[in-house]
Amino acid sequence: MDYTSLITLCAFAFLAGFVDAIIGGGGLIQTPAMLFTLPQYPIPTLIGTTKIPSLAGSMMGAFQYSRRVAVVGRFIGPMMGLAFGASWLGSLVLTRVPNGFMKPLALVILIAVFIYTLTKKDFGQMPQHAVTARQQQIRMAQMGLVVGFYDGFFGPGTGSFLVLGFISLIGFDFLRASAHAKLVNASTNLASVLFFVNKGTLLYAVALPMAVANLTGAFLGARLAILKGNQFIRVFFLLVIAATIVRFAWDLVGS
Image 1: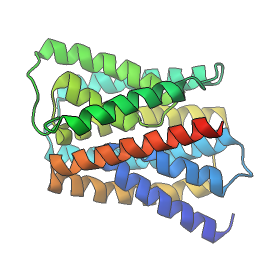
Image 2 (image 1 turned 180 degrees about the vertical axis):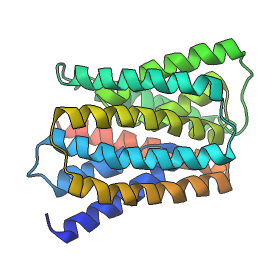
Image 3 (image 1 turned 120 degrees about the horizontal axis):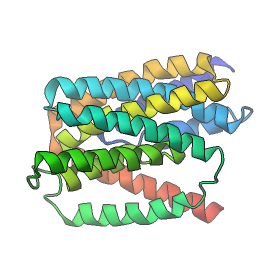
């Protein structure tokens, strides 16, 4: 691979890390760039390779948020553990069962989420409702299992789905939801990295420079989100959901 291709991939990785740290959706930028730039490699190798920069970026984002945003520590740890196991299981099931039905299903859900968020102006702008500690524990565990499996089995939009869950089910605002989402996303990315390392050969010469670029973007994205607050993150959330909808619709029409 030439240096131009590597620099191009690092640029996309930087942008993916920046966007993903704010609201999720970085995979929609990074993964197509990898598939387009290196078509000579098997798709599982390329998908697995992208998980390394994704892990670096999600860990950086999680670190930045955790320093400035209060985290539900006693529940987020178990949720991360469940999400890790569910993501590994999802990746395992993916090797045995086709996941083609997920794209139209995710498209319908994302359209509903976009319309709801666009019309409900106060969604995620402040804590929405109080839930008991027991309810938080149960709902976060359920989210970890469902979204973790989704990330391993399909993947795109995982960060956005986590943010949505933390707002609608736990009652967080956008900033706190993003902080918790990055922690959980880091655990699902780690599971995917370990799974693909175990299953096949990864392109470490590509993955490591991309990881540096991704975590740099994540550092800046998280800092900007913390500085600008909920309204800024809401706008980014709508933009990312819209881009995801367009991407899924384009893929479905093309197929």
